[in-house]
Length: 117
Image (cartoon, rainbow, N blue to C red; front, side, top):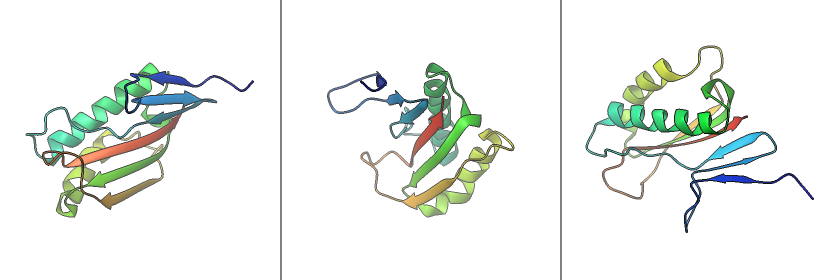
């Protein structure tokens, strides 16, 4: 039998994170407070990623890949300002940023990461 899959915050539709074979796969993280601007929402999302990675025994220096979804590409520079202050120097992961409609109109950003544990 293969290694077990550990799932965190399992709901009827999805889990917030699954860990398998030393890799943490996070669900897309969005802001709790959608009334904030792009900087505030980005900071909230990155804090949520930090918390999930810590629960798995990992951290932002071990991110293998990041996928960023922005509603408005005009927010790209402001989002990058928050990201660049947060990301671990010397450990910047491969990343893609795309424009996308998100599930709730108040959300400006969603980030998905995969990280080594």
